[in-house]
Length: 95
Length: 487
Image 1 (cartoon, rainbow over the protein chains, first blue to last red):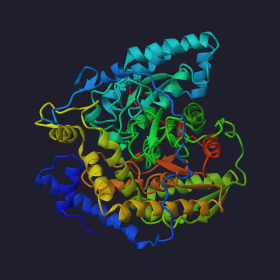
Image 2: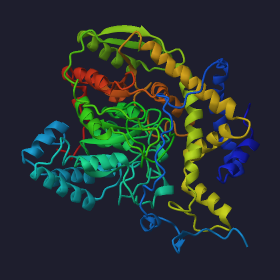
Image 3: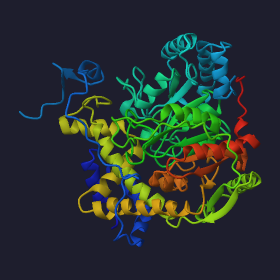
Image 4: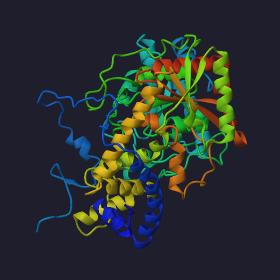
């Protein structure tokens, strides 16, 4: 499963990262080296192994459906690039 | 004063020989003198630090002090601290003044410690040399031509150069242990889930774990007593009974079975590191420990597995940085999509982009099972290796890093070589096990060597005991770099 230049450009687009043709070539070289290491994973038979995401195998905790946060929008929106009428402003999407 | 242990500083404060304000000013002065050279701090805020010092002095005066009340602590710039610039080493957050405290910061505030500043780090904790920081590399105080390690390089440097008595760090694949090793200080990554990730900017959520960096095991125990605690706001936080991590420090280690994984002493390990680690193990024999050879057969898979899981989780976590609610937004854009694209392209550095691309690729359609699920399966095999090994030994030891600190710029253009510097630390991270590094000598060019101590789940008190017993009979942890202007 060799990574191609097209793959690099495709995932860059998916990840919303601009990448020039030169950068895509450099990235491909570097990623190919890393994937040559990653391909070692294929050498091990894991057909009977259960995937592990947490060492202690914890389950998602549930809590009562009640409000626990207080309204702090002014504080949080003080960090926003643009706001208006308590809303975050972005460029117009629908004409 | 700058070489004092946390216990000694605590006594000076509680007996009113020094006030927290005086202590804080002394360390701030040290930072002012030394940081120009070492670049260990991204943000220092005298006003905020002294406010906390005054609160601490009032706590001590009214008899409400805890062991660490009034002591200045440096915090890795990955921890959100209310009113403090919190950058995570990235241009993306170079304008982000946190509106809230991380759980770890809340706990240190409650204990009455003083935030002495926010330390430099690899961008979003992605790096092993501190060279990926938007704020420039940190220098290793033992040799300014070499890297301090990463990603908690600023914290390790700050402790080594005596700019802070102790510091917080985070470890995803080795980011506490490797810089502690390269800077000749002590650091511990606790069992995954013991320290809350709330307000700790996420890199790879199934691996990220906070922990302390300090001058000795005894100091680390006091730091862990503050940092560890259940927090409902972190879905993977463990409901574990509170422990006193200092309780076993003085316990003799006669009869302790130390396992040396043969895979950690194989090809790829430098001779100078090997010699220092062997000498440390010999010292443990003198203390009455029994040395046994163990095997962790899947060791060589830990780097491939880590570099699938960590970038995959990172690509998902970092999708939140879109220039809408906080962080960097491009000055110019034509539409919403272009705003995302330009903000992210300008906000992230090269290594972060590389990992986002790897992560996006392995999670993309058709590859999820082949990469992410496969890596999670191998992760279980890596964890099982440790379970088997701990049937034959109480503790595992080896080198923390395959070599001493490398030169600045040496591995900059070769990400693969950089990734291999986590060869010994990543496995314990994947297994979720606690791991520690303590200084045990010097190698090439008089650069420090660290001993890696891995324990079973929840064995932090034992690991600290094992480290402390070594530090009682040796003086590597008291050695400090030759720093001018520091008293």
